[in-house]
Image 1 (cartoon, helix red, strand yellow):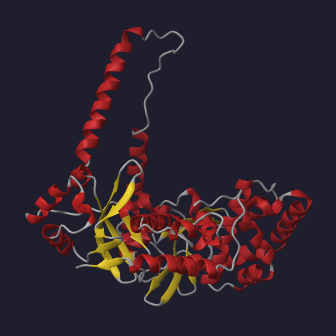
Image 2: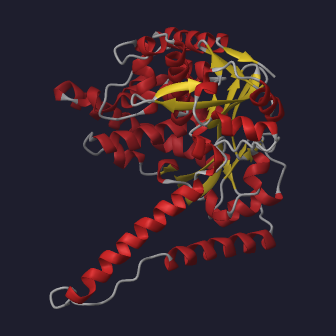
Image 3: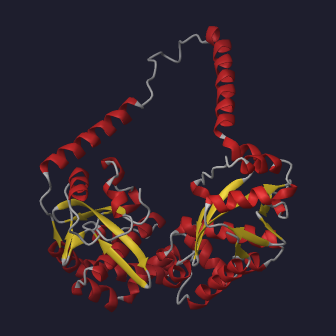
Length: 430
């Protein structure tokens, strides 16, 4: 799924509707957030197939200028099925708020309130904006179960439930009014429906078939040796496949990595050595070298030995392929690190942060700091520090934990300082 446009499901008066949500993205110095729609209308469809058909055939909408729009248009229909995290039963919010404040109930209510608040802001819906602005008590839901313990906590939960019961009809009315369903191309709809049917059939075929043998009377003694032999063969096959999948970089124990900074996109190398798994970068004396193209990186590897990776026993293989111009750099998804914008996301609070992107960024900053022999990252991200608490909660949200509270100005500045420190030791070489 294109990471910056998310399929969502909204439970409203007319049933469950499917649409797309683009969390905040940046274009230059401007920041945007939008839903699939046009002008004052938010588009909702009664099926995933209809959503897919519309996306593929209509560019007159508010998401058409999004940098990931063309990617979304090429997705299979099944890839537009919202996951559980992005399915919101908004009609059921009052009933949810009337339940006991268990962790899972609070988490579900928090998600429903948050997406409602965002729709209100993006679509400029006065009843919804007024509901959240006038009832700051609702923010207590974002802190998990901590606020709802003891007699005072129960009273707080009851007050929130009463507020929702009193005003939620107005919220739903505002949502119903802004949602519309445009016409969908019939041929595109048929194609999407066929894709979903095929995906469902393939999933059914993948279900394991069981031999209807009574386990109380089955005699498996004759099959035991054969089963053990099959298991050994399967293990051998798995090991062979693993060896085949390593590729050149896996064989030499080095990973190509891609790093996005405010200066642009760069390619470099990293590996881990020793029993303590110490990170080692293509660089020297704590400085990491970044390259703007595969060609410049290959040329450097062919011509230079004065860097940290040159001491590896496998580096001669790298140099040999570099000299022959045969190196290619297939960067795995888990080795792509994007740093820009995270400081602004942290400033907005943990819910505004892409936890996976932040987790990867922490890995890169930590590895680079260890490579340079400095403790700044470990010290700044310790769980007892405000930044460490915020980062850990953003990466590992838990409704049963006490959430950090804003404003997050100091934490955002502290994160930016860590990134600046890294970028000062990240030197462009080609």
